[in-house]
Image (cartoon, rainbow, N blue to C red; front, side, top):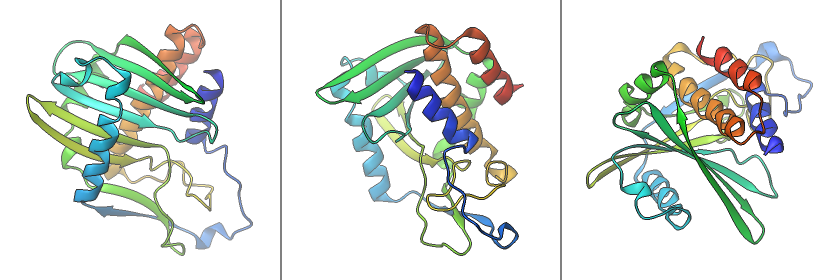
Length: 225
């Protein structure tokens, strides 16, 4: 678990990227928007339903918002975090799913979350937002980077889906010195979503006794204070 948390944190700090000898004054990141396609919605839906085998029948029948935080951080094992935000209440169900050779590890915790986080998660209309990917101006073929978040909002029999990419991650093949902070203000809700997802991984680690309270609190302060 410690390895996993370190891997996730390194994504956000952009510590795991190898820098090339580029003239950074000539390189700029731009942000491309487009509406989610029917195929992408189908893939998000399939991804959500793929977790049915790991939970009891009632897990995905509740009304609220489900977030899947897919880190894609390890070629040996894959870790997913599934979060559920109910329509009311003061907590988030946070589940950690690790895919290992021959077995899967699933652990869930009910996390009490500050009201400022819950209120924004419930009030921001994530489903109406376009998909945004970060690209390098001279590398137009660079695709979206990891991590990513899949969203399903459920209300009775109605289900809607959305997809988000972490705009603070390094580009796949080139890292810029300023790409960590150079996210335009209009995408602050995208950044917020990944800050919440990452913060909750530390909450899970804290409840498991693998992360100290001071480390968890420092992550919270860095993101939300």
